[in-house]
Amino acid sequence: MKRAFCAVILLIIGACIYGQNMPDAALMNQLADRIGLSEEETERVMNIFQDTESVMQEANLELNIFKAQLARLLFSSDVDMREVEELLKSSYEWQLRRQLAQIRRQVEIRKILGEERWVQYSRLLKALEQRRENQQPPNR
Image (cartoon, rainbow, N blue to C red):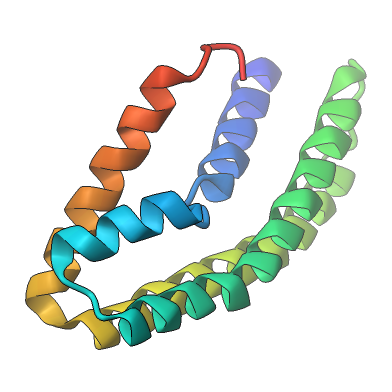
């Protein structure tokens, strides 16, 4: 039971850490060309990524710390569930910060692009990121 609980908690934390990362300049230029962004629009989108990236990186770091602390707590055969609960409650604040930054990023970019280009952008970004992941070694 404890192992299943630990696995579920670690999966939840891991799922919250996953998200849209800041695309590099080459990827952004490729996206901009494909969906017809002007230089000004491309700059605005990159600024949005930069503004939200630090918040998301900090949240990821904090969540990694919580993940390690949780693993340490659950290592013992005598787990203090109050400590686990407090740790999880503390991690929720960082999850919220990260998700809010991610949502702010998506909303602001969507406003710049409009609905039609937003759909193209989302599809292309996912496809390009998936292609990049497939080219990386499996033990990242």
